[in-house]
Image (cartoon, rainbow, N blue to C red; front, side):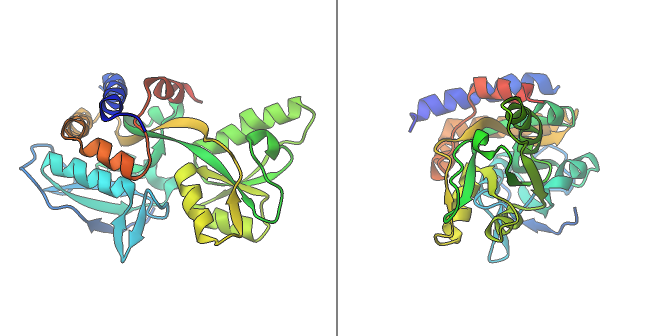
Length: 288
């Protein structure tokens, strides 16, 4: 595990770098209590309204009917620093960017991978980095790397960055090696992709490493993680509406305050996550 100082310095550098470039059906649920009074205009007075897909544990989920998970804990802490409560709007991932463009919420916190196309639609505040893992059936072929998936079908969540990677970069590589392209089957949620794998509708599933771990544990031995390292390390960002400098600045300042008081490092450590490395952020911003 990296030291606390290293984690904060890396994250602070990445957030500062991106800050310079930033000048579905739903039912909202409130979580955090407000702290000091905020001067930042929000959709709902005294509340930071956040779009998140609550079908993505351990990042975004419902526990006893209430929003929970890493993004929820993180945004509760951000909102507290801003002096407001949180108001979560459960939105399926494929519609989540459209929602902020339609002014349904103030920010997106839903494990939104940073990419060049998305950076044209929202302004990002990077807050951690992750990668992907491959899930295979325990009684079937073990797929370790994307190259093993040539000629196979893979379940992924609709509108995710890996859809483009698998259908273009990886499939082109497969064909260049004389192998079949990867057949990418998209699903609205990860649980649906996992169910498709269990019912033999796809050969494998690719999803975020932390999500994959939880999915495998829930199947009690029917599935297993077969990739040996995180695939496609990528920066993850909180999304705000393009040009919303006050909101972007307020969230950036809140995260900096979390880094200073140690709560940022504690929360990332709890979920075994890492701060954004500037090199990973740069590569993510250049990804098509």
